[in-house]
Length: 114
Image 1 (cartoon, rainbow, N blue to C red):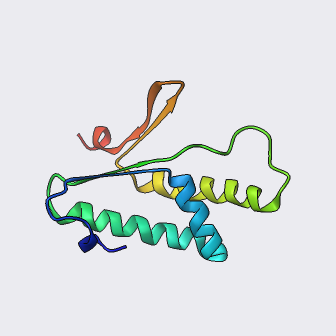
Image 2 (cartoon, rainbow, N blue to C red):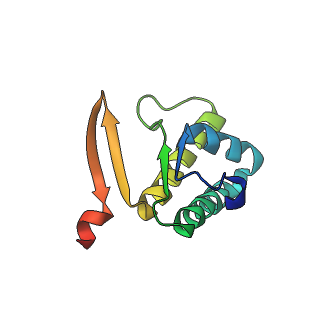
């Protein structure tokens, strides 16, 4: 995916299901899943920075809670999602958690710069 693939008049991109995207990356690039995830994030950041007013919103489910899966592949997916979400949160302008419909802002870099 490259930024030029997005329509030029679009100012908002919402990607839902990040955990599924990470699963696909894991299947294709097992050892390099974080590298490929960060390359994907870099592409989105470049697109966002090309024009004022552009915004990317990524939505993903936290699959790290509950009972640890028996299958090694499922455990690896669970770990990979956690690592990728950490990388995302480290560079995001804002991170919100929604739990049972209640939103909590975990970090907001705009608040820190004002």
